[in-house]
Length: 243
Ligand SMILES: C[S@@+](CC[C@H](N)C(=O)[O-])C[C@H]1O[C@@H](n2cnc3c(N)ncnc32)[C@H](O)[C@@H]1O
Image 1 (spheres, helix red, strand yellow):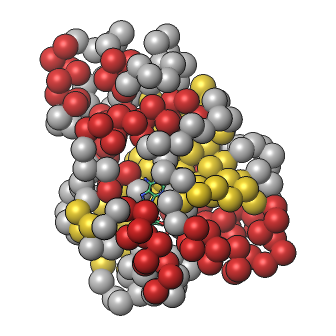
Image 2: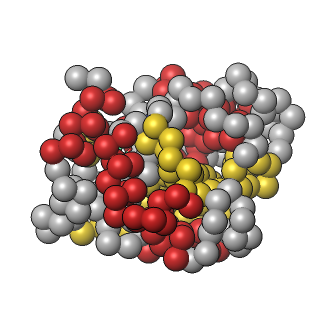
Image 3: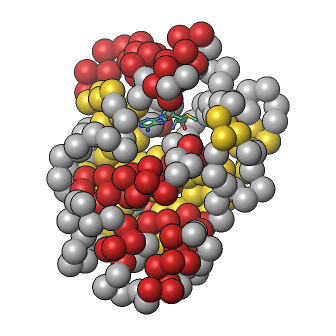
Protein backbone atom coordinates (compact mmCIF):
# COMPACT_ATOMS: atom_id res chain seq x y z
CA UNK A 1 0.00 0.00 0.00
CA UNK A 2 1.29 3.47 -0.88
CA UNK A 3 2.08 5.75 2.04
CA UNK A 4 -0.71 8.19 1.11
CA UNK A 5 -3.28 5.37 1.07
CA UNK A 6 -1.99 4.08 4.40
CA UNK A 7 -2.51 7.42 6.12
CA UNK A 8 -5.86 8.07 4.47
CA UNK A 9 -7.04 4.69 5.73
CA UNK A 10 -5.79 5.45 9.25
CA UNK A 11 -7.63 8.76 9.47
CA UNK A 12 -10.85 7.49 7.86
CA UNK A 13 -11.10 4.45 10.15
CA UNK A 14 -9.72 5.71 13.47
CA UNK A 15 -10.79 8.50 15.75
CA UNK A 16 -8.01 11.11 15.82
CA UNK A 17 -7.91 10.93 19.63
CA UNK A 18 -7.28 7.15 19.64
CA UNK A 19 -4.13 6.98 17.49
CA UNK A 20 -0.89 6.25 19.33
CA UNK A 21 0.65 9.66 18.56
CA UNK A 22 -2.34 11.65 19.90
CA UNK A 23 -1.55 14.41 22.39
CA UNK A 24 -4.18 16.54 24.07
CA UNK A 25 -1.65 19.36 23.94
CA UNK A 26 1.67 19.47 22.09
CA UNK A 27 3.43 20.87 25.17
CA UNK A 28 7.02 20.12 24.19
CA UNK A 29 6.53 21.54 20.71
CA UNK A 30 4.88 24.68 22.07
CA UNK A 31 7.71 25.21 24.57
CA UNK A 32 10.30 25.13 21.76
CA UNK A 33 8.17 27.33 19.50
CA UNK A 34 7.90 29.92 22.29
CA UNK A 35 11.68 29.80 22.72
CA UNK A 36 12.03 30.64 19.00
CA UNK A 37 10.65 34.11 19.81
CA UNK A 38 8.60 34.56 16.65
CA UNK A 39 6.35 37.49 15.93
CA UNK A 40 2.66 36.63 15.97
CA UNK A 41 2.45 37.07 12.17
CA UNK A 42 5.57 35.03 11.33
CA UNK A 43 4.81 32.05 9.11
CA UNK A 44 4.82 28.61 10.75
CA UNK A 45 4.44 25.28 8.91
CA UNK A 46 3.57 22.04 10.71
CA UNK A 47 4.77 19.31 8.34
CA UNK A 48 2.82 16.07 8.61
CA UNK A 49 0.62 17.88 11.09
CA UNK A 50 -2.15 15.29 10.62
CA UNK A 51 -4.99 15.90 13.06
CA UNK A 52 -2.61 17.24 15.72
CA UNK A 53 -3.91 19.71 18.31
CA UNK A 54 -0.74 21.80 17.85
CA UNK A 55 -2.68 24.09 15.51
CA UNK A 56 -5.26 24.77 18.26
CA UNK A 57 -2.47 25.70 20.67
CA UNK A 58 -0.79 27.93 18.07
CA UNK A 59 -4.02 29.83 17.40
CA UNK A 60 -4.67 30.12 21.16
CA UNK A 61 -1.17 31.59 21.57
CA UNK A 62 -1.95 34.25 18.94
CA UNK A 63 0.05 32.95 15.95
CA UNK A 64 -1.90 34.05 12.91
CA UNK A 65 0.07 32.65 9.94
CA UNK A 66 -0.08 28.87 10.28
CA UNK A 67 0.09 26.23 7.53
CA UNK A 68 -0.64 22.55 8.14
CA UNK A 69 0.73 20.17 5.51
CA UNK A 70 -0.14 16.48 5.42
CA UNK A 71 -0.38 13.54 3.02
CA UNK A 72 -3.88 12.80 4.26
CA UNK A 73 -6.86 14.99 3.38
CA UNK A 74 -8.90 13.10 6.01
CA UNK A 75 -6.44 14.12 8.73
CA UNK A 76 -6.75 17.78 7.82
CA UNK A 77 -10.54 17.45 7.65
CA UNK A 78 -10.53 16.13 11.22
CA UNK A 79 -8.57 19.18 12.39
CA UNK A 80 -10.80 21.56 10.44
CA UNK A 81 -13.89 19.95 11.97
CA UNK A 82 -12.47 20.30 15.48
CA UNK A 83 -11.54 23.97 14.94
CA UNK A 84 -14.85 24.96 13.36
CA UNK A 85 -14.88 28.65 12.32
CA UNK A 86 -11.27 29.06 13.45
CA UNK A 87 -10.14 26.70 10.66
CA UNK A 88 -10.50 29.65 8.25
CA UNK A 89 -7.48 31.28 9.90
CA UNK A 90 -5.25 28.37 8.84
CA UNK A 91 -3.75 27.36 5.46
CA UNK A 92 -4.34 23.64 4.79
CA UNK A 93 -2.22 21.81 2.27
CA UNK A 94 -2.39 18.17 1.15
CA UNK A 95 0.89 16.79 -0.22
CA UNK A 96 4.12 14.88 0.27
CA UNK A 97 6.81 17.00 1.92
CA UNK A 98 9.54 15.18 -0.06
CA UNK A 99 7.90 16.00 -3.39
CA UNK A 100 6.14 19.35 -3.05
CA UNK A 101 7.69 22.57 -4.28
CA UNK A 102 7.14 24.67 -1.15
CA UNK A 103 7.56 28.45 -1.54
CA UNK A 104 11.15 29.68 -1.15
CA UNK A 105 12.16 31.10 2.26
CA UNK A 106 8.49 31.43 3.16
CA UNK A 107 8.53 30.13 6.74
CA UNK A 108 10.04 31.43 9.95
CA UNK A 109 9.48 28.08 11.67
CA UNK A 110 9.23 24.47 10.46
CA UNK A 111 7.76 21.91 12.87
CA UNK A 112 7.64 18.14 12.40
CA UNK A 113 6.65 15.63 15.05
CA UNK A 114 6.87 12.00 13.98
CA UNK A 115 7.22 12.40 10.20
CA UNK A 116 10.98 12.47 9.44
CA UNK A 117 11.42 9.10 11.17
CA UNK A 118 9.31 7.42 8.44
CA UNK A 119 11.93 8.35 5.82
CA UNK A 120 13.92 5.14 5.64
CA UNK A 121 16.02 5.85 2.52
CA UNK A 122 18.85 8.35 2.06
CA UNK A 123 17.09 9.75 -1.04
CA UNK A 124 13.92 10.53 0.94
CA UNK A 125 15.87 12.16 3.76
CA UNK A 126 17.91 14.28 1.35
CA UNK A 127 14.73 15.40 -0.41
CA UNK A 128 13.27 16.37 2.98
CA UNK A 129 16.34 18.42 3.97
CA UNK A 130 16.29 20.14 0.57
CA UNK A 131 12.65 21.05 1.22
CA UNK A 132 13.59 22.57 4.60
CA UNK A 133 16.43 24.56 3.05
CA UNK A 134 14.16 25.87 0.35
CA UNK A 135 11.15 26.70 2.50
CA UNK A 136 12.69 28.06 5.72
CA UNK A 137 14.16 31.53 5.61
CA UNK A 138 17.78 31.98 6.71
CA UNK A 139 17.73 32.55 10.45
CA UNK A 140 14.45 30.64 10.72
CA UNK A 141 13.87 27.78 13.15
CA UNK A 142 13.41 24.06 12.60
CA UNK A 143 11.94 21.71 15.21
CA UNK A 144 11.96 18.00 14.38
CA UNK A 145 10.83 15.25 16.76
CA UNK A 146 11.36 11.53 16.12
CA UNK A 147 11.37 8.29 18.06
CA UNK A 148 14.53 8.07 20.20
CA UNK A 149 17.20 5.35 19.96
CA UNK A 150 15.23 3.47 22.65
CA UNK A 151 11.83 4.25 21.11
CA UNK A 152 9.56 1.86 19.18
CA UNK A 153 10.75 0.30 15.92
CA UNK A 154 7.41 0.95 14.22
CA UNK A 155 4.89 3.76 14.17
CA UNK A 156 1.39 3.20 12.80
CA UNK A 157 2.62 -0.25 11.71
CA UNK A 158 5.33 1.28 9.48
CA UNK A 159 9.09 0.88 10.03
CA UNK A 160 10.91 3.95 11.33
CA UNK A 161 14.48 5.11 11.79
CA UNK A 162 15.25 5.95 15.44
CA UNK A 163 17.60 8.79 16.36
CA UNK A 164 19.69 10.31 19.09
CA UNK A 165 19.67 14.13 18.95
CA UNK A 166 23.23 14.07 17.60
CA UNK A 167 22.38 11.61 14.88
CA UNK A 168 19.27 13.53 13.88
CA UNK A 169 21.22 16.78 13.69
CA UNK A 170 23.87 15.07 11.55
CA UNK A 171 21.16 14.21 9.00
CA UNK A 172 20.59 17.94 8.54
CA UNK A 173 24.24 18.98 8.60
CA UNK A 174 26.17 22.21 8.69
CA UNK A 175 23.46 24.60 7.46
CA UNK A 176 21.60 23.93 10.71
CA UNK A 177 22.88 25.05 14.12
CA UNK A 178 21.61 22.94 16.98
CA UNK A 179 20.10 25.33 19.53
CA UNK A 180 18.62 22.75 21.82
CA UNK A 181 17.52 19.18 22.23
CA UNK A 182 15.15 17.47 24.58
CA UNK A 183 13.57 14.12 25.30
CA UNK A 184 9.97 13.21 25.96
CA UNK A 185 8.18 10.11 27.21
CA UNK A 186 4.92 10.14 25.30
CA UNK A 187 2.01 8.27 26.88
CA UNK A 188 -0.20 6.81 24.15
CA UNK A 189 -4.00 6.65 24.58
CA UNK A 190 -3.59 2.86 25.03
CA UNK A 191 -1.21 3.39 27.95
CA UNK A 192 2.17 2.61 26.32
CA UNK A 193 5.19 4.87 26.75
CA UNK A 194 7.12 5.98 23.66
CA UNK A 195 10.49 7.73 23.88
CA UNK A 196 10.86 10.77 21.61
CA UNK A 197 13.71 13.20 20.98
CA UNK A 198 13.32 16.80 19.78
CA UNK A 199 15.96 18.82 17.94
CA UNK A 200 15.60 22.57 17.72
CA UNK A 201 17.85 24.20 15.08
CA UNK A 202 18.44 27.51 13.36
CA UNK A 203 18.71 27.38 9.59
CA UNK A 204 21.89 29.26 8.70
CA UNK A 205 22.68 30.94 5.42
CA UNK A 206 25.49 29.11 3.61
CA UNK A 207 26.72 29.59 0.11
CA UNK A 208 25.67 26.65 -2.01
CA UNK A 209 22.50 25.91 -0.06
CA UNK A 210 20.22 26.52 -2.98
CA UNK A 211 17.69 23.78 -3.78
CA UNK A 212 19.18 20.86 -5.64
CA UNK A 213 22.47 20.94 -3.76
CA UNK A 214 21.56 18.18 -1.31
CA UNK A 215 22.38 18.29 2.38
CA UNK A 216 25.73 16.57 2.11
CA UNK A 217 26.95 18.53 -0.88
CA UNK A 218 25.93 21.69 0.98
CA UNK A 219 28.02 20.63 3.91
CA UNK A 220 31.02 20.13 1.64
CA UNK A 221 32.15 23.69 2.17
CA UNK A 222 32.80 23.03 5.87
CA UNK A 223 33.33 19.28 6.29
CA UNK A 224 36.00 16.89 5.07
CA UNK A 225 35.08 13.98 2.81
CA UNK A 226 35.33 11.69 5.86
CA UNK A 227 32.93 13.94 7.80
CA UNK A 228 30.48 13.78 4.95
CA UNK A 229 30.64 10.02 4.65
CA UNK A 230 30.11 9.59 8.38
CA UNK A 231 27.28 12.10 8.43
CA UNK A 232 25.64 10.36 5.49
CA UNK A 233 25.69 7.20 7.59
CA UNK A 234 24.24 9.22 10.42
CA UNK A 235 26.98 8.18 12.83
CA UNK A 236 28.66 11.38 13.81
CA UNK A 237 28.16 15.02 14.36
CA UNK A 238 31.58 16.60 13.93
CA UNK A 239 30.42 19.94 12.66
CA UNK A 240 29.95 23.06 14.68
CA UNK A 241 27.11 23.34 17.17
CA UNK A 242 26.96 19.72 18.20
CA UNK A 243 26.54 19.36 21.94
C1 LIG B 1 2.59 9.73 13.34
S1 LIG B 1 1.61 10.92 12.53
C2 LIG B 1 2.02 12.41 13.42
C3 LIG B 1 0.99 13.51 13.23
C4 LIG B 1 1.31 14.81 13.97
N1 LIG B 1 2.57 15.36 13.57
C5 LIG B 1 1.25 14.61 15.47
O1 LIG B 1 2.28 14.74 16.13
O2 LIG B 1 0.17 14.34 15.96
C6 LIG B 1 2.48 11.15 11.01
C7 LIG B 1 1.79 12.09 10.06
O3 LIG B 1 2.66 12.40 8.98
C8 LIG B 1 1.93 12.37 7.76
N2 LIG B 1 2.92 12.05 6.72
C9 LIG B 1 3.62 10.90 6.59
N3 LIG B 1 4.47 10.99 5.57
C10 LIG B 1 4.32 12.25 5.05
C11 LIG B 1 4.93 12.94 3.96
N4 LIG B 1 5.85 12.35 3.20
N5 LIG B 1 4.51 14.21 3.70
C12 LIG B 1 3.55 14.79 4.45
N6 LIG B 1 2.95 14.17 5.49
C13 LIG B 1 3.33 12.92 5.78
C14 LIG B 1 0.86 11.33 7.99
O4 LIG B 1 -0.25 11.49 7.15
C15 LIG B 1 0.52 11.56 9.47
O5 LIG B 1 -0.50 12.50 9.63
